[in-house]
Length: 323
Image (cartoon, rainbow, N blue to C red; front, side, top):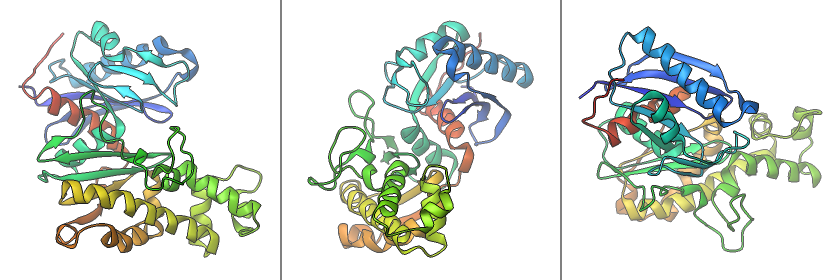
């Protein structure tokens, strides 16, 4: 059994790689600007070079395996990236196989929400907790569910798509094509869209003032809310309540001990946390709700790296490899 994994985070504008041990210590962290326009094989080359640099610095190639976190949709058990919204041209890419051929090591692929849940349970706010729900409030709504110490993945490894649970059959159309998804109320793109609607309906001038000539984003709406803009505050309040409706159902099903909230949008703080906390009891059974703690993520900007490593230790617990 190896005590370390090589972890790669493909989310965002940079590729982040590091050695992570079983106690959650990150070693030899490296980052490189993603060669987005270079296509699939240019990015594969970057990951391989990053791995070589990290292994040389670490002084060993003995690992439990390589973990890669990528935005979905994925087929993690097949190791295939079906589509990567931040990587043009990435469709049906057999990422695990391509990296295994180059690195001569087992590679496990996971989506950001599921891996973040594993990361929180192994290294973060949910350490030693066997039942938790992790929520990543970002551009979309990512999530992962740990039940009785096991990640809920489903038959194809696609489980945990909490953001696309419908909470309103007459609601807005989501980017996934579904109707009334939670993400259509609390995802960063949805917050931005509601901000634009508030400006166009003249319910808010501050949002446009803060955005200036730039596009309206969730961060802009958050700044307006923090400055007391009523329309912006209401947008986050409705998002927090919508989150409570959907998560309340999951709480009743899984009876978790902990709800961990991370992602960039979580920095809006009480704009989301307060309406979520105050609304959740209305959508859960009281005996179940009484056992839940709601806490922020403890992994912060390294969630992807921690999650990728945790997925290796979870999927390949007894493996040790060397090329």
